[in-house]
Structure formats: C-alpha cells, structure tokens
Amino acid sequence: MASQRIASIPALTYGTAFKFDDSAALTASALRAGFRGIDTAGSATAYREALVGEGITTFLAKSEITRENLYIQTKFSPYKEGKDPSGYPYDTEAAIEKQVEQSFASSLKNLNTDYVDCLVLHSLYPDLNDTIRAWKAMETLVPSRCSYIGLSNTDVQTLQKVYEVAKVKPTVVQNRFTKATDSESDETDIPGLPYPRVRYDRDVRSFCRDHGVRYNPWGILWGNPRLTEEVSKSDTLLQEIGITKETALLACIQASGLCAVNLLCGTTRSDRMEELINGMKRLRNFCASSENSKGRWEALVNTISKRINLD
Image (cartoon, rainbow, N blue to C red):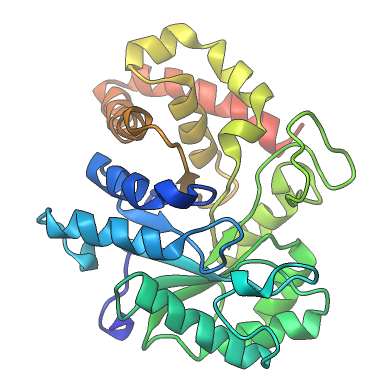
C-alpha cells in the first residue's frame, strides 16, 4: 500500500502519451533502458493505460527490479464537452467525486497494482470550484492508495488557489515547457495542446520553487528548437562528454536553477532511451572529473538558464 512507502520521484520519467498500440512494448523498453518512472493516464484520448500496465508487468516478470523500485504516475482526466464519453474510464454523468473514484479504480486495474505513486489532475475545469472538488476527491486517496497528488496544464492563479485550500499540497506540476505562450504561438504549434501563459512557464516554475513543488515539464525537445540550436553551438564540449544535443538540453533544463525539475521524456526509439540514461551518467562523471570540466558544463547551463529565465 502507498502508506507503507514514500517513493522518491526519479530524475527521469518515461512519458507514454500518444504511444497507443505500441505502449506496452515501449514501456517495457524504457524500463529495460533504465527508466524507473512511468507517466500515463486513464483517458483514451492520448493514452493506452492498460497496455502501459502490460509493459510494466512484462518487465517486472523478467527483472530483479520490483514494483517498489518503480514510480508510477497516472492521471484523472476531466471530461471535455464534445469528446466521446467512451474514452473516459468513468461515468461522465456522475458527480466529480464519483468520477475520480471510478477512474482511479480503473487505473489500479490497468496497471496491475494496488497503489500508484502519484495521481495528477490532468487538466483544469472551466469552473474553479469543480477543479477544487476534483482535488478534494483526490486527497481522499492519500496516503492509503496514493503517495502524492499533483496538477497538470495549470496556470499559476489556479495553482495558487488549489494550494491555498488543499489539505494535501501538490507535489508535482506537469506543464508544457516552451517559449511560445497562449497569446503568441510559433512553429511548434499543435492544435488542441495547451500553452503556458508566460514564456517558459516562468510564473508557474517560480511558484514551484517557492512552495517546494516538483516541476515536470513536457514537450521540451520538440517544442524548443531554438534552445536545441543554442546547445548545438557547444558541439565540441558535447562530443568530449559523449552526449547528444538532446540529452544536453534536458540536462540543462534540469539544472536551470529556478525550481526542482523532474524530466519527462517520451522517445519511441530504444537507442535514444539508452542514450539518455547513459548520457546522464557520462555527464555526471565528466563534471566530477575536474573543476575545469565542471566549470565548462556550468557555462553552458548558465547560457540556457538565461534564455529560459530572463529572455
């Protein structure tokens, strides 16, 4: 049971959104590569939670790793008008409290577990009172069946209001990370996906820093081509360390300093999964090798930090 353990939130979590029929194989591949965190959701709009559970079960059956060594994060997804109700793991006509309970029960079954490490409110309701009702319902699951709860796709005003009334404070905020905002989109625009209200979600990240909330950004690699270009200017350093520009950018974001960051990565290539896990190890070894090496890496981190925190 969740009350018997408090899982540490891993630095890297594998995201299973939009993996659909490949969810089981990719989840197992990510765990074999060294990921120990898995992020999913009960809604069928972008996830196949039961297949994610199948991938976890397949991995555990052939590994010395146990369930207790994994961090499993899923979501309760509020119903959106116009969507197919059959894509939600609950009765969309039921009270919000009942919806949360039904969705969570479905997640436990799909994931073949009797607890999850974190349950995230996938999106906000149009009415703040409904968002708070959902949060209060999620609180009842802690700590017996869930260790942590969090918010996703939130603005700072709603985050602050939920935090103020919460008996169980948010542990995680999972938001889109990009320079573009809801008032100034760019070439990375994908219809239907949320944007932060402030560049690089600075206001939300500042709140997370001030209140000890972990920031779980999504869309870093495909949503920030200019940052990738900036990292690429240090190609000689990256080659010396033995990491790709993608690994370097993720590591820079994690070390940016504004708040504690737990990365979300959703690559569909097993070689890139392994490169990220092993690349982070090589980076740690490089920084530990000498003060000079550490300083050279920190110079790149500072360059990216200025971009995302000040520009």
